[in-house]
Amino acid sequence: MILADENVHGFIIKTLKEAGFEVITVKELAIGCKDQIVIQLALQYNYILLTEDKDFGEWIFAHHAKGLSVLFLRYSFHEFSEIAHTLTHLLKSQTFERPFFTTITTKKIRIRKL
Image (cartoon, rainbow, N blue to C red; front, side, top):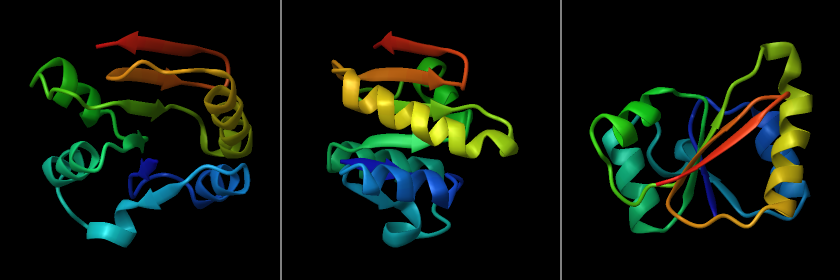
């Protein structure tokens, strides 16, 4: 299951759901919560965290948050449709070994095993 951070565009969430992925949002669980709570939710329920917030990279690489798997989206606003389709294709075609940190742009995908 995917936990979508509050900053993820609604079109991306809708596209993932329409493609058959189970997606729950931070807005549904704990609107306005701090990053630490988002991390706790992701770890507690074994969610993959989908975010546009680079702070989660800091949590993993600087603060050494253990066990967290992140899909980090980087795109310009006008690319939201393209990034949604890139993400959907990636999730359908790739098997991820957890934990991981993956950066996704419309031109490049970088998967880092943690």
